[in-house]
Length: 348
Image (cartoon, rainbow, N blue to C red; front, side):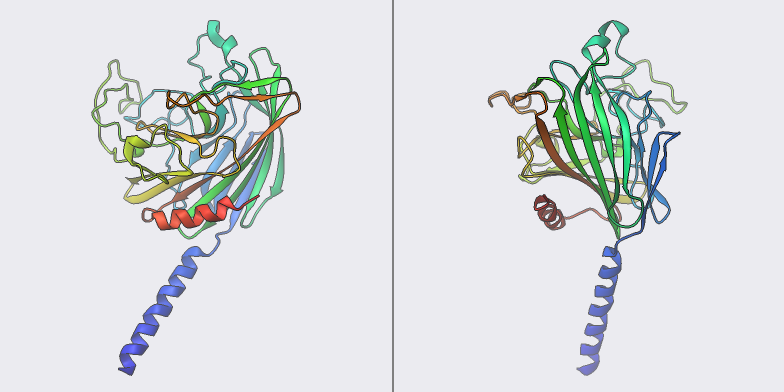
């Protein structure tokens, strides 16, 4: 009996040590290259993501977005295209924050695909300066000071975006604290195109048997829409209990998507903070790989609801808090999500 008890205790201690090691914070490093207009965030020397803010971009963004063990979860097109990827929505690249209706100006859909004659209806976001808040260690991060400009270069909004990164075991996360300050009178229209988003790799898609234009193995777009379900196995689920494409447009405090990719089981979760405008937000979670939390859209998703519109006088501000979690080496559980969300929800 003593031997059995000793064995059980040994197993318990071993499992406890394993759990402790899995949850131990990983060393993070932030490498800022002003000339290249990038910031690399690494864990144990492995690239988690690269922040890009070159003037040639229509918005600052993170690309690629990887797991702790280096598996890329973001779509490659158009920066780093891969065979059989869809070529729709070229503005959906990496991870970003924009909106589709600011005084009638569309900041979400702008890309090289927009004809010159229609560019006046689109805006772009430029980074004015970067502040490195903590270069290494857990909770390292930086603050980006951005301007939301219309086509003529007029500033509509000033943005202060503070990012904090943490990593432990088989997951990492980024918290985004956003303050938008009006440089003129601002009207946010009720619009589905927003807000904090990531475009995921093809494995996270679930638009089975949908004909689309995809890249061939030589990375040229096909001439006709085709059906290719190879690798697709994405699955959405939400805090309200909805699953699959039923999640789209509904109100939730968090949404998760999971998929098997490169012999690993990967989950991506986005949290919406209780103090955000429009909480609980509606979700632009599409089966073709778009995953976005939208605090400024309501009737655009469910036409029986009253519109969600916001007005800002000059110098008024809006604040948002979001978190994105990436877990590998096994899908995340609802219990874990709820625990992580509780910790996030009490942040101020």
